Length: 155
Image 1 (cartoon, rainbow, N blue to C red):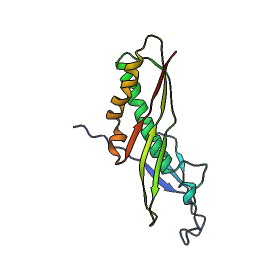
Image 2: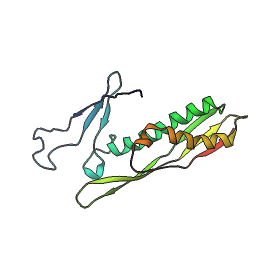
Image 3: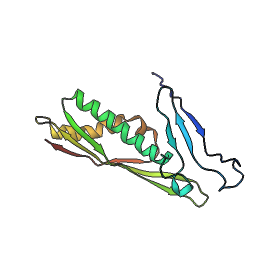
Image 4: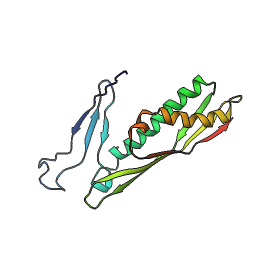
C-alpha cells in the first residue's frame, strides 16, 4: 500500500484586537496555505457569522467531491477512448444542523454536464461516471451519500 500525505496550514486572520472575548468580537476569516500554492481566503459560512466573499469549509468539501469526481472521470475517459471536450458541474451539498449547534452533511449531489467529441461512445461516457465515483478518494472517505446525476451529450 502506498501512503500519500498532505500538509496544509490554516492561519486565523480575524483577530480585530480583542481575540475571542465574545462571540461577536472576532471575524471568522482565515487563510489556507500549502507549499507552492496560492493561498485560499476562507471564513465560516455566513450563517455562522462568516464573510460571504470567502470560501468556507462546507463549500470546499462540496468542491473537493466535485473536483475529485471530475479528475477520475477525465482519466477514465482518456484511457477508454472517450474524448471529453467540455465538463462542467453544478454540485450541491445538504447539511443538517443539530439543536446543540453541531451538524453534519447528509447528501451531496454532483451534476456533471459533459460534452463528448463525435465518434465517442455516449453509453460508455455515461457508465464511466459510476466507475469514477467508485475510484474517487474523497467520495470513498465521507460518511454521507454522494449522488451522481450526469448529462452526456455529443457534439
